[in-house]
Length: 75
Image (cartoon, rainbow, N blue to C red):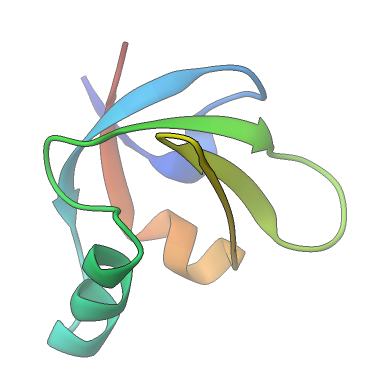
């Protein structure tokens, strides 16, 4: 089952299956290493401020609007 990244709880991981939205948003995410086939883990997924995710050894803060456009399959 595919869900938006925002549906994952803290500590959960998912494999990116799609990035919705325009080419600019997609290009920006791919430049940060978030692309289809990549595993992402939610570090901070609640509360105020941006969502923080782990991509490989990197930690990335992204806004909730863009996080909703990242579609993942739970691992």
